[in-house]
Image (cartoon, rainbow, N blue to C red; front, side, top):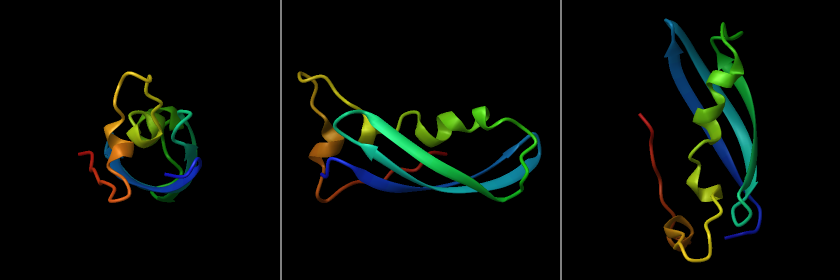
Length: 89
């Protein structure tokens, strides 16, 4: 695993009956617990709600970029180079 990695985001959903799609590119330092992402509304913009509603969906719980204490195994990083996938519903 590189010290800095990139990732892509695709998010679709409906909030109060308003459908939207968001795409983005991010980067992070998996061993330091840092990540950033630039998101763009591709359908349904402008959004009738604050971005704050979506920010936990794009980064919170993004386990590849979690920094674990020395005594806790980091099973995600241990799964590479084969890698893994997950889907939130």
